[in-house]
Image 1: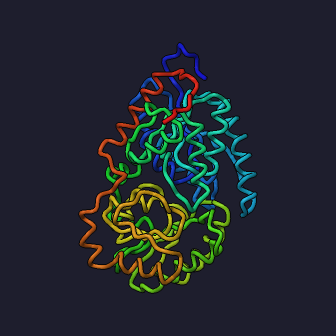
Image 2 (image 1 turned 120 degrees about the vertical axis):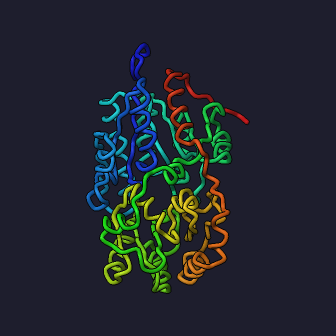
Image 3 (image 1 turned 90 degrees about the horizontal axis):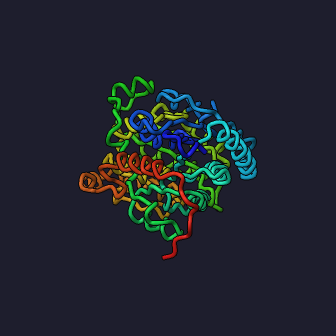
Length: 393
């Protein structure tokens, strides 16, 4: 959108959740501070603007950005309410892009609202840099959305070589598909952490008696079986089989029927002094907590991607993340109380503890952030780009 003779290109990062901002923020900050040829700004939408999810837009401000806020309020708890919110998001993004006039839009992942962002950018002829394409998560509609966003994007920064090959298989130009490794793993290894005592003070909660579990459970949007509430009750019942366990449970994202999960978590934590429910930890507290933890449990992609770098096991429950490449420290199990408890028992076993130091994280690359920074700067320098062509293999 900028004048082709202009030496400065405008790069807009769009973030909709606590999770994706934690992953996008290192790249946004380095480009802002170290790339004088780029003008970096941020658009915040969806969960960032919801008090019930921690009003995490403040985390973006804490990183030195004043984001443009694009409301896409979700009115209702079912799937249709998300469709209507997606339409509002697309409209809000048209307004945001008219205001900011970006030359590049940077997106991450596969949330339903990201499809609205990508659709608006594509229709306004703004090239998209998409991070974390090519992945598989068979238990969520996010899987299809991720591939759709790939087809709307021009530059692709993938987390593994297998995912790079899959993006190319989708018809994308190999020269525009770069395996950078996962930025979440870079964060895990480089973000300054709170000490255990600092974290306990910050949370107002003791982590010092017995093993610690970090628990995050989202709706599996393609699960046609039990309700999300029934599914999470099985997980909570399994946790009760380990009375020595201290659990910190974070809220789910705001997919359809997530309110059911939140209600179950709130009731469970209120009745148990060894359990803390948290709306949002933010990246630094979350990574600090993982550094203190003995296991991670639930169905979040973080348990697959980042957690293995802390050399603790992940109990991955149900179908939501099925298909993702996973380290040997990830223990897949079914949704029942018995299966979950068995997986937790193995995660805490001496056998697993012996294996953990030697298990490699397949999402690790030493220079992930440098690769992403270079890719975006080179892409900006190449603008304007020609229309995409389908790459046949």
